[in-house]
Image (cartoon, rainbow, N blue to C red):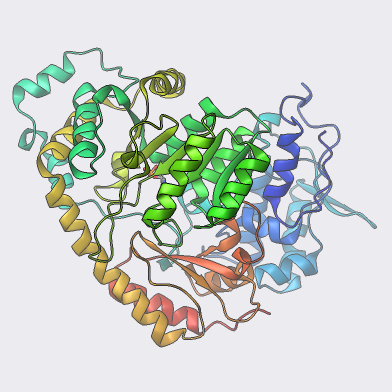
Amino acid sequence: MIGTVLTEPIHGEVARTAWADGMLARLPAAPFPETPPARITAAALADLLGYWSASDGPLYRLLATRLGRLADTAELPTGLRLPPERELATVLSVSRNTVAMAYQVLRDEGMADSRQGSGTRIVPHQCTPAGVHRANGFFTRILGTSPVEADLTLATVECAPQVAAALEDPSSVLSAAARRAITATPGYFPYGLPDLRAAIAGMLTTRHDLPTRPEEVIVTTGAQQALDLLIRCEVVAGQPVVTEDPTFPGVLDALHRSGARPVGVPVGDMTRLERALAAHRPPLVYLVPTHQNPVGVSLPLTARRGVLALAKAYPDTVFIDDMTVADLPLTDDPALPLLAALDSCTPNVVTVGSLSKTYWGGLRTGWIRAPQGIIARLASAKAAADLGSTAYQQAIVAALIAGRNDEILKWRADWLRPRCAAITAALRQYLPAWQWACPEGGLSIWARLPGNADAGAFTQAALRKCVAVVPGRLLSATGDADARRHVRLAFVLPPDQLTAAIKTLSAIDLPP
Ligand SMILES: Cc1ncc(COP(=O)(O)O)c(C=O)c1O
């Protein structure tokens, strides 16, 4: 049913309920839903607003503009009742007057109306039913253009110089004959360019002790597309999917958009994982066993063996080992094996990877390693999505993996470690009451605010000081209370900027 009452404090809960009820399937052909969702909570709206205040101009104007865009895209659907001014002002760390004036702008521009006793509602305007979805505020930093002085939200890395050089001058890694061979093809490779499939298979075989044939690899547009394809191929709308809680927010977004129902289990909790499998029988389990994003811990060997045992016990469930941040160690401890490397006879364990965090995110090069049957399904879905990633660049990337991978990974480790050292030192110096664990790897720290401070309100207060951090609830499958006390801090800025950003955060009065 469409008229879902938003009783849960996070917007995701709403959409989950709605999707689970088959909302999209039953949307009317009319341009607007007849019985719209009733209201959105202040905290849920804050998530959708994202980094609305990080531009120049009066706050009420910025707020009205962002609310207007959300209404344009139907993320705030027609008829939705906006939160009371006072409540929204509290979670956004602004005055009530700012919210009142923003609502007034919306009314003046014909996007909202207010009636005695029923608050302020979004009114019909130009949008489509297909636009109604559960957006994740996490992506507002990429989707928007608002500048902040210190962005600790996106774990994006600068391009490794070896990669930049090869992109600038492909002849440095590809012979003239190799370049001509690519342009002589039709250019469409839904499975991926054969050379790149072979290079990825070679890297998994030699570097990760995971014997892999090129036929067991599909090239994707980043790990995000890999996850999206797996969800499209393995999950039917309404089905439960088990993830760690907290987890990589991109997977939550893909799950919500597909209509799946994320079920969170605490990171590393094998008992809860087993219980979730028994109770929900999910078609998919998503894990980041190595350098978990956002927590930065790695699943110990015994627990990895435990996951393999569960994969054998639940052969109809596909277990994803997302190794996107696995090649970013922050200690000199020996690398732990990928799940699939522990047992070659568990066909329902698939591996997702990416070069985004080691080479450069702009390559948009990821992969899935799985049995050939699953790869064939994924290739059909990939063909429907984009007919294949760009062929010429895949040839360059294949040459880099085959020839310079170790060198690039070493360069990235030297790039990353001073950043981690800077942020951890700054946290110790300026925010000694915060709780966090030194990450074993990856690009982020999962930090708990002292006392019961709400991380959403803290995030908004930080934005006023031009520092952007991610409130923990955006990384939680369940809107978990503990996640709401956490923020994720990515440490990809230069070390001095990280230190300055943490010092700025320390000047914020913690919201109650
Ligand atoms: C664990 C994890 N998986 C997947 C992704 C998406 O990576 P890509 O940029 O390759 O799409 C990320 C990016 O942050 C990530 O941290």
